[in-house]
Amino acid sequence: MNYSLFPIGVVHSPFKEKFGIPRQPLLVPQAKATLELLVPYNSVDVVTELEGFSHIWLTFIFHQTMRDRWQPRVRPPRLGGNRRVGVFASRSPFRPNPIGLSVVALDGISNQDGKVELLLSGVDILDGTPVLDIKPYLPYVDSIPDAKSGYASEPPQASKSVWFSKKAETQLHQRDGGVELKQLIVKLLEFDPRPAYKNKPQPDRIYGMRLYDVDLRWRVMDDEVEVVELAPVEAI
Amino acid sequence: MNYSLFPIGVVHSPFKEKFGIPRQPLLVPQAKATLELLVPYNSVDVVTELEGFSHIWLTFIFHQTMRDRWQPRVRPPRLGGNRRVGVFASRSPFRPNPIGLSVVALDGISNQDGKVELLLSGVDILDGTPVLDIKPYLPYVDSIPDAKSGYASEPPQASKSVWFSKKAETQLHQRDGGVELKQLIVKLLEFDPRPAYKNKPQPDRIYGMRLYDVDLRWRVMDDEVEVVELAPVEAI
Image (cartoon, rainbow over all chains, first blue to last red; front, side):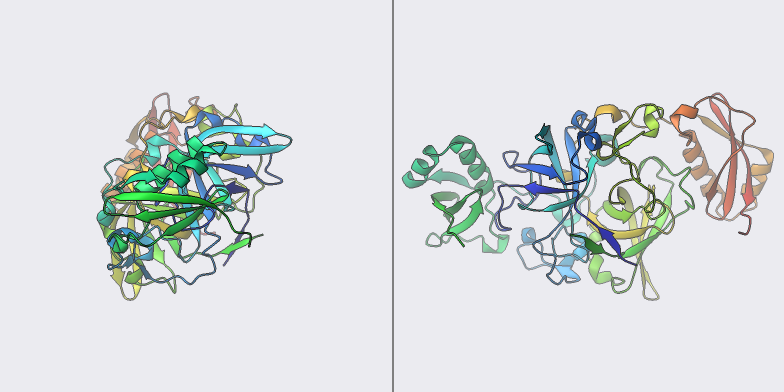
């Protein structure tokens, strides 16, 4: 039997592609997004008293990978790409049902011109993601600090120090919200978004990711990341 | 756009009806269940290394309530049935998408005669529930002990002391697994499964719930619950 589910909202996030998204929610508090409720859920009624909760669960669809084939075993990036674990022992987006689950911080609820939006931070969710459900985070049920977590017992570490080229500094300076964008970039790149098996320095290689309306370009040294530039995104 | 999702497993649990199920997972560790993986997911490959995790998330369908109509605002039982909150500020099973989310303890994985089963405890899930996804619980992401939780800041309290009639004691004594069943019944009824607005004693009223293959019958006094009998379930 199949179940037909539908989006109740859509996420507007700075992350325009999969590469570079934080590995887990709340790792990067500077990653802000909004969740826009869709018709017929776009009323404050459905979120009455939600503002009393500091965190919420989002159940969503991995819409960018949903057409890809899943495999019974996957290679989590943190295991260096060599070891395989069962797909249900991972949080990989390539799953039998393409369901994502993230806890994010709820900073407020906006209700303007008939548009209801949840203001979120700490997101690890792609722009345009369809959301199926919102639930309040209940620490007395959901928080199990001593849970044993097998191969994933250590959180990802922020291992790099991040600095900006003159060009990148100038580009940030010329921009509204440049200070916040700089903080976000530092936090994202500190974690070195490359898979762990690519942990060798490759100073000649330029990496890129789309962030908001720019194409962020950087280079990885031993324990440093240089932000080269914030190029305008090419029209497609 | 709709998304067509399908069960990857089914829960076999002692709870045969909605009334009496613990309000949240892990409140009643004695509530054991199995999650049977369905074809083509019934292989140990898909759960390789999952045994290193003490807890897992289950995303499932509230199959018994899925045809009921949802309302923008609901009355959580803990608020005494008077106050309404938004459906997305609750964990009510009556939701736009009938998606449930529970963290449960993983006690082991069994692989016998081509049947792969996850052995669970602390469940709050109805028998026969279709499961859409399994994810490992990661404390460094999922555990937020200080999260603010609005109207639901206190866990449900075990408020009643539970004792058994002679008849009930005899019925338990005659049964395989009677000791474990008794422990489960005590933990379930300590929480007084009635909605909070029915918190007056009604010593003449007999409550009932189906638990495994019996019809459990009890009576509520001031701060006590008397288990009257474990009647055989009537053939339907």
